[in-house]
Image 1 (cartoon, rainbow, N blue to C red):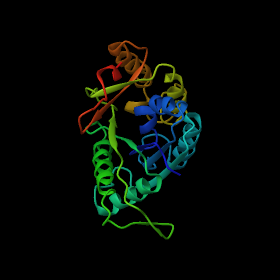
Image 2 (tube, rainbow, N blue to C red):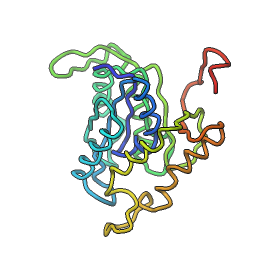
Image 3 (cartoon, rainbow, N blue to C red):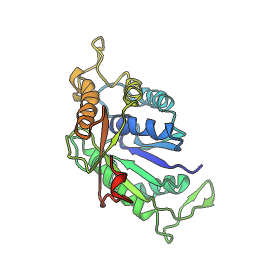
Length: 238
C-alpha cells in the first residue's frame, strides 16, 4: 500500500496531539494516511504499554487512518543509530509516502527531539539506493519522501506554516480522548503528570483556536520545516 502521508511519533498519542486534525482533514480529502509509533510508551507515568496498544488502535479508528504500526523501540532509550534508522527506512520504503510528519525538533520530552532527528535522517537515507533493505524476504527499492515536516508539541515553537483545520478539531479531540489512561480524568487514581492536567487537555483546543485566530480561521495546527516552504503562486496562500 502506498501512502500519501506517514505521520510518525516517538510515543502513541504524539501524532494525535501534534497533527490529529490535519490528518483528519487530509483523509476527508481522499488522502491515504498512516501512523508509525516508534515506542509503546511503556515508561509513561500512567497506564501501561498494553493499555496504550489498545488506546492507539482506537484512536486510529477514530481518525480513519489506513494503517498503524509500532516499531517497539525502547521508550526513552532509543538512539539515532544505524539499526534504528534501518527499521524506519524499511517502513518508509514499504509505504512510499510523499509527506512525512514527525516530532518537534526541540521539545520538553527528550524522545521528541531524538525522534525528530532520527526520522529526518532516516527519510534522507531511505533515498540512497546503496543502502539495501529487505521486507518479508523481498528487496526494497530506495524511496525518499518529498517533504518532512515537524508538528508543534509541548513548547510554543513559532511555526513555519499553519494548516487550517476548521471543522476537524472535534475529531482530533475524540482521538486524544481514546487515550483514557493518559489524560485528564478527575476520577483517576493514577499519579498525575504534566499531560494529565485539565489545563493541558484544554490547551489542545485553545492553542489550535489561537493559531486559527492568527490566520483568520477558527482552528489551525502549526508545523516547522527544515527547508524553505515553496508555493506555485502568491494566490496559493490563504
